[in-house]
Amino acid sequence: MSSLNSRFFYGIFPEVNSKRCHGDFLINQILTTHGCFPVHQHRIFGKSPDCECGRDQGTVSHYVYGCQIYREVRQKYFPKNFFQLGILELILNTRAKIGLKIIIQDVLTKYLTGVVSSS
Image 1 (cartoon, rainbow, N blue to C red):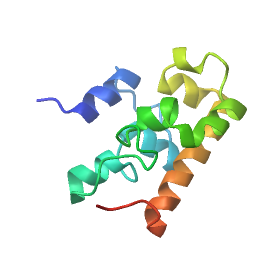
Image 2: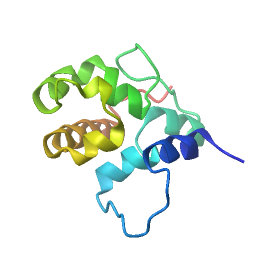
Image 3: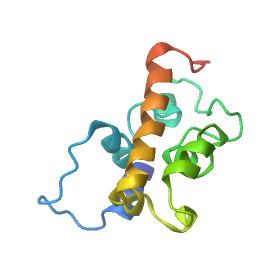
């Protein structure tokens, strides 16, 4: 049995390796697709799965690659070819990782402070 999350995670880490450990809370939110993302909150609590931008559902991929709210963060921190890179490649890029953490911290903060609608 396979879930979308396990397929997403397998796409990033196709082989289990206990030597590889990412002990970063914000990065782990990306890797597991759990936590503050509206799509995850929808599955668990029935909240709206939509991003506050109104253009798509609040998935990891949407926030990293497409959400207009974080366009400036991507322009400042991500390499120009980031659309061609996978999530893991962005995590391993020191500058892009900073941008990823800024995005996820903002999504998490909005969720915790109730800024994002829970309809």
